[in-house]
Length: 414
Ligand SMILES: Cc1cc2nc3c(=O)[nH]c(=O)nc-3n(C[C@H](O)[C@H](O)[C@H](O)COP(=O)(O)OP(=O)(O)OC[C@H]3O[C@@H](n4cnc5c(N)ncnc54)[C@H](O)[C@@H]3O)c2cc1C
Image (cartoon, rainbow, N blue to C red; front, side, top):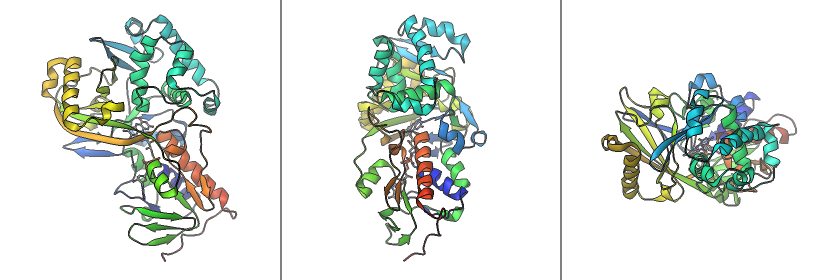
């Protein structure tokens, strides 16, 4: 996403470029595979319509974004509880008030928190005193019951961090995104997002199945031995590759594992996310993407995404499938016997961890050395929005760096 966003800006400025991509498709971690007519995103992920960068970089109407119900249903101590956004779902307010997670004070604090994070410019959220998300919520006055029963699984899903050790700046940013927009997926899968960016670029500028091996200020060496000269090089690979190739400090990643099941009967009654309010796992959050968009499953069938985070994401396939089935039977009863496991998708390096201090400043420098620039979610907020933003900033840095305001065509291969 960072590389595509960078290419988008360069292309709009008529700067010729070549984008070398190691894999056979654009999008990196934002990918969708079609298996037996089911669309499997590479781990459960969503697009927030309020993302400030995405709103500019993407054309939302052509993505046919499908919305989630604003809120979550939480399984706690043998019962389901609804926590809905009272402004957008006023009819659900009585159920939200009645939910046996936290108390009335927690509901009032939610309203105060919305006001707090929506105040001022987005950038102002990233200069606030930094804490962990858990400390932030405790300081704000939320009860331990509400933090553990609601925020822990909800932001465990967003940050893949059930300990809530992620920076409160990232929490404030994401809470604002939830408050100001919709949570969506494109009707035909998350891969439609990078595809849209790719289709706006000249075909001959994108070179797939071509890993880069070495980066220098005026050239890259490809894994197949070719050397390609350039006026500037932008390294828009993931944090892991960047630390190996460019000697940057290592990036710690958070992992997630998604078990995709198929079924005739959806386990949820609405297009909502379901959460593990007990914290016993292994599934932290569950969604039925086919209830959000019918294109995710063949007619008459449904796709269930059971998502594990933290230590649970690292349990091997056999044991995890068994314990997921056990937990799902507790949640949904006998219907789970009809679920068919379609695929287990493991993403060990899903999201760069963002502990307090990480977003200091929110955008890390995009220029590494004269003629070498860097982009990626690990340089900004770890999200689709952060990747897009860092790509745009890298392109702007390239444009600013070239004193003449324009770049020459990449030199022919040597
Ligand atoms: C399971 C999961 C759930 C997520 N949920 C959300 C969510 O709900 N909302 C959200 O906003 N974000 C979410 N994210 C995060 C988001 O997907 C990423 O932050 C973002 O896509 C990162 O983009 P990137 O361009 O920085 O990196 P990447 O997507 O990692 O792209 C790097 C690219 O560089 C290529 N590459 C690497 N090395 C080389 C090389 N040597 N030569 C050539 N090419 C190379 C890779 O093949 C890849 O295409 C999630 C991520 C995962 C995995």
